[in-house]
Figure 1 (tube, helix red, strand yellow):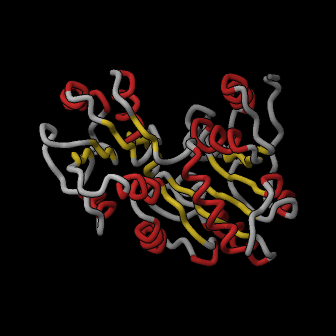
Figure 2 (figure 1 turned 90 degrees about the vertical axis):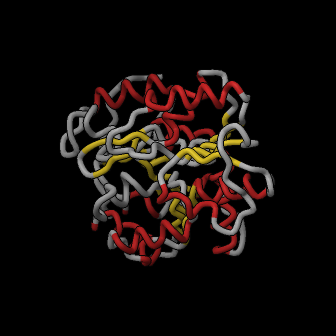
Length: 289
């Protein structure tokens, strides 16, 4: 694959008419964890006003309705999207198939809503049938290595893990914090069996496209679907595996390694795409109509 620097697309409006459905990442595109990005919200709202359908697709380890409430607090207007699908939704579907089995939870108390209404009794590692990982208990200070001993105990029992958020890190303001994917990857490297419930894996995309089909009264050809995201590992890889185009946003998770949000190093970005053996349809600094 060529490593020539990509050119920047400055406005989403130049691409929008080619697509009927947008699957947009949330954290890193629509907000930074602390506040909404008004330009991105406006861009999605204007796309919808012209007849497009927007499904937000998030690796948040919480059900979609919980993410909706969080977006309300961040002042993301509901006019910016039609529906939300999260890795929490996928996690719940997998857990529902294991109804009644005791499980061990790795993650903070704020994620306990993912278990609401499920027959999934929590148990210590010694009694659990499987594990659900939604992230570090304290992502402000913890790293995956802090969980090595705990993961060793899980591995000794050959416990199956559902990873409720395959992201390795996520932006929180101007810094990065670890996510469940980093812990799950360590467990996998130790020989543990892991199911990743979100991007870049297929189940979350299937749910998102099903929602879009329900909203539009029928399935949309993949050639008319655009993914918008800021992560090579999750957004670009997941969409490419599905055969859909990507608008790649540089001001999100890769901003620091690209030299900043306002003036990304496009040669470095080209090398990242070449190493991944993938290329997006277009690249933009941030989502603007």
